[in-house]
Length: 339
Image (cartoon, rainbow, N blue to C red; front, side):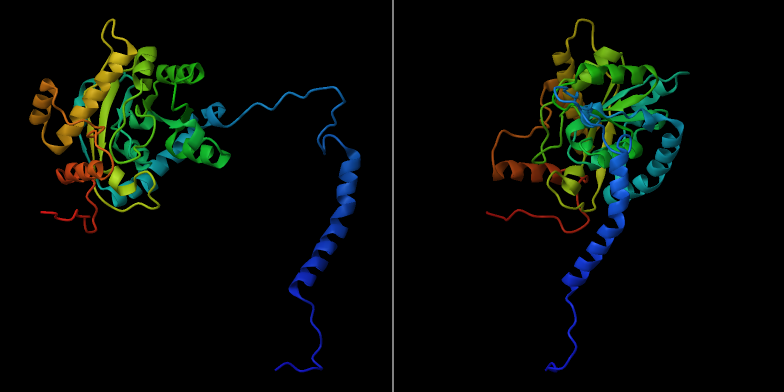
């Protein structure tokens, strides 16, 4: 019980109020002198009737990533990719990489050409996986096409993506002239590209129809497209997941593709999608079985069956049960036996 004659103590709020008043009294004279001096210490005044043009947008698709390809940033990125990023990928995803021998012909050239790697896309983990799985000589000069509206909407995200993964902003819906000109200049300078033809991560674990970005950029730059199938990242850290759950993944590289004479972007894009689909079948079966199915047009579709709701998820679990990729190291989820 409190004593009636105990001395009164001010509340914390009152104490903070006095501290605020003290700070204001100390800083007010300095701020007043700065305001009186005007420009350049304060923003310049604008005469009436004069319209000041809006500042040029420096984020999104307009973010300048040239600094990330200079020597200091490349040195830092090499340390990040070969150190923390590689360790994270191995500990979380345990990747197995196949098909790099299919790139041996261009790798043996005196001046290996730049390539466009076109993988399917289920997770943010895909980019870190590609940064470590792409073989040399392309890994050390690799840029990643990243969604301008997601990775470049804030300066800290843009800086982090550019420095760690050499990401460049690109519109996920349509490849604009500015983006294509930038990529063309990079390819001519020897840089290879990772671009996700689906345009975004899978919303439900199945693939999405390919857009024409990879085919268009290949036709524009002359760089061959390498189809890539990534298996397992969706169940480890798919869209909507709050944290990754360690498991296994598989990366399968295909043979480089180029557009045939007179082949338009739409048909070339369909051929790239068919190649990735065949690699997906190969990851679950074997090379010979996958090629026979592809020749008959019977490769299992990456987009999955045309079911809805739980039947589609059931089919996805059956597909994942066929292979080892994506299996979590904790107990697997099992569907109930309904007889």
